[in-house]
Length: 121
Length: 108
Image (cartoon, rainbow over all chains, first blue to last red; front, side, top):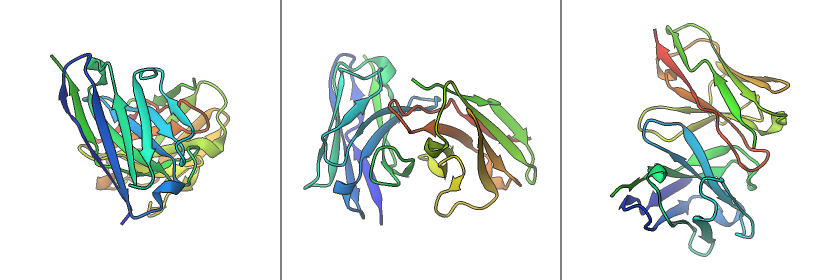
């Protein structure tokens, strides 16, 4: 079935880096943009970043711009979020999510289960 | 950046009652690019409504969405026990694709 599975979360010290992955299955990954959305403990949803189906276009929230990068490998059906210079406020569950149509201007109908990132000394 | 404001913050209702949730945008948002999501504790969000008024696949018809200018609404005609959750609106017409702060619908 259509599925997204995140991995790579964990505990990391402020200022360090972490790389999250999102593995896709059950659909033509190379035809879809993919978003990252996060949710801090007890907080609401915060959109983080999106990458186009071919990897050529990327957009980021101001809160992560310059610190996070996003990439994809369509041959492996995987997406990555490289998080550098992590701050305590980056602590959150990170979800990858697929728009219901191919481009990023569409609502998110498929979500992963999330992976927890804790930034703490 | 488009800021979405949701009201009320919490809605306390009983099963069978009607729920009306509001989402107001800080500037014009094309109705084509407004979605509603439901989230239950420990779960990922679930898409309910896209394009302001179109139900996503498998969503019961007690959920409906509407729009008037910069004001959007999600209506649950008769609350079922499984509908008590947090609801978020999101616009996706331009980056950043911001979410509203959410409305909690809890049992009265």
